[in-house]
Image (cartoon, rainbow, N blue to C red; front, top):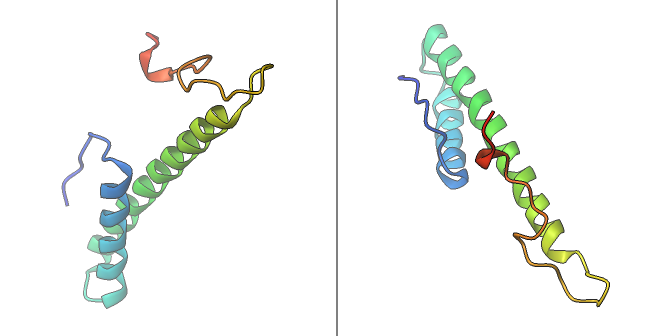
Length: 86
């Protein structure tokens, strides 16, 4: 099981996570293979949780009302941590 440094999109991460769970539930993996699957599963779970939190934040921004009662555009007032240089 090779480590991939690129972050998969939510759907890909979730599908991979489901596959890992199926492999582990079959009980045919060695201890080392099971640990590798578990480690990868933890990484994917965290990536999925982050993606869901980001999506929730975007929805909240979209649903915010302006003083006029209109919804606010998504890009207005949204900080994108990926675009900032650190």
